[in-house]
Length: 219
Length: 164
Image 1 (spheres, chains in turn orange, purple):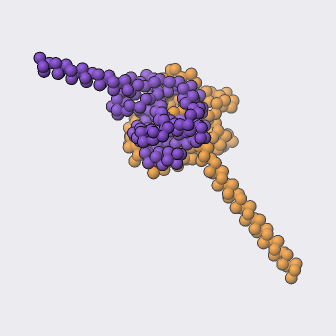
Image 2: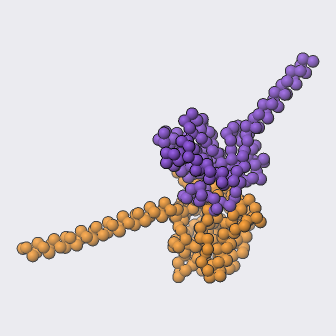
Image 3: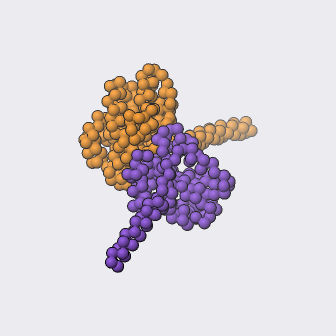
């Protein structure tokens, strides 16, 4: 009886231990999620998740579709924001320069169209036609991608690099240090980062901050 | 003659009033050092520092709320600072006409530095660069609140009342 009792107690304890462990793991996991949200989404070194969003040609696009890519220049941008407009030609130039070298631009409009009608899908199509965007221009209708990546403004850039079949974040931030006049930018953050990746080096300046329009979140 | 005289007086008055009005909309072009100095201010004053721009729709929308708050708490050592992110080149073409059209009398700083990565971290470590962005602080009382994104009169009023 006594032995049996001890045995039962032990299994119970083991079960309890398992539960405590499970609970701790869960809590830690939750804390981690909270932490990522607080620190603003995906940071350099993080794995970047793929997504599936509608392009202006009505086709669904995923990063996995780009078999040849070495990485991506993900730009959260939009139609209406004056700062995003100032950078349109530079985003086109980035794609034209680096897509053939393995780093295409993937532009994503994260804004809620009910809050900012100029950023609705039809206007996206129109803007892409006017400017002959050479890259995909995707609508993040649920805003899930913007939330996961931690996009705060437009334009806001994430450079991803394929490493062992995973996509690693290698840069987060702005495009250069002169929104008003590209010719007078003394630091071209995205260009330098890609050049460094091409040369097999680490990105020396992995995060930068820049001014932009707040993302129009759905309420 | 009398009609002529009164017409002259009227024109004179309008000109004087207009120039007074134009003068009250002075914009000071400042560097980052000036903002840093302000952030270090040790007086027992609650400073409300709002970063905005004429091209930023949510900023423009909330500006009147900041002005009303500044007026309501003006007697309580509250100081409102409107810091514009407009480019130096649009001072005369956009910023000043905007202030005139909205009849904004408060002094405005134009922060003339687009090397954002250099100075945004000096203002607040959590600020990603999206505007509007607002800092409310009283260094002497160790009070500091940041508002990332839009706010409104009610939220500001509640916040300030909690801080007094």
